[in-house]
Length: 250
Length: 168
Image 1 (cartoon, helix red, strand yellow):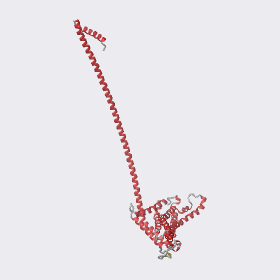
Image 2 (image 1 turned 60 degrees about the vertical axis):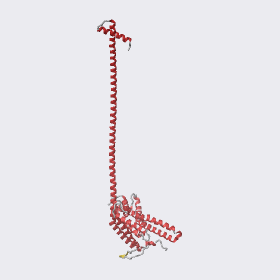
Image 3 (image 1 turned 90 degrees about the vertical axis):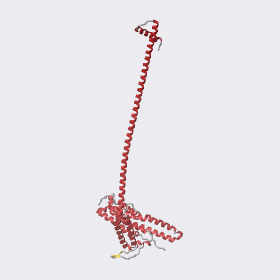
Image 4 (image 1 turned 90 degrees about the horizontal axis):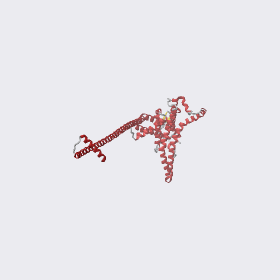
């Protein structure tokens, strides 16, 4: 059975649907988005309903994740940033569960679609812009001039900073998409090699593919969710504390 | 790459936003308040316990200092008592020694005086007896009595002579 390593990312319309001419058909990725939010919601709500001071396993796991995100927010945005806790935590859980559920054979990795990661990064970046202009008004444009820039460098710095600002949502989206895609492509290629290699040489790619799978499970899936979330916090934090100066801007 | 086929973009974007919205709503409503409150409660409890432990430590240290001070005072008191007892013992010893020395001195003095007295008495007795003996001899020799004065005079002369010839 020979197939392209990219075959796994293909989508097929399962249930055709549309609203006002816009296609919103159900496909495999959509189903797995539902599975992701169902798993995340059930797990977190169950953990949240058992409010024991000495937690059980599930509660510990949920609390660990919540505390992880809370510390991330407190470190980057301070106490005021806790307003964004639900958003940031939901983002983290969505990406984390997408990444992990996608690693189960036969499932679909929602985050391996550039459009999915792009939507998240656009929401995050858009939110940081809205927040920045809402808190600081036109002064938020000062984010284009890093503190300590000499006057004669300003004309040069502004274009550079505009590019770096625009690179934020792009890199955020591409990083997650590329990591998830690359991991799954590599696993598919190695599995293909195992099958075509046969008994004689097939042990080598399967050994590597087990190692890569372990790497994906232990590191990539979690770390990419973490990176996406911490960058979200950093971007929102930048909007919160323009240049880190006015901590009490609002 | 299948990911760049734009046929599915609209449905993915739509369902992603809807799913994310639902998840955000569910977690915001039912999961996060509980978990966060438990975390805060636990943090508070830990902080309280730490505070309490710190308080207890202070209390213990205070007590320790108190006891040490008391112990010191007691030690000093004991030392003072010991010193006083030693001093008293020394004084008693000295007093006793002085008293005994004086007593011994007195007894020695008494004995010396007594001996001297006895010696004198003995000498006196000897003198009287010698005198009488001499008189008796003299009477026998002279066959005449002498007056008291004469007797005394002769006796003294005889005794002087005797003491010269017989050194004591």
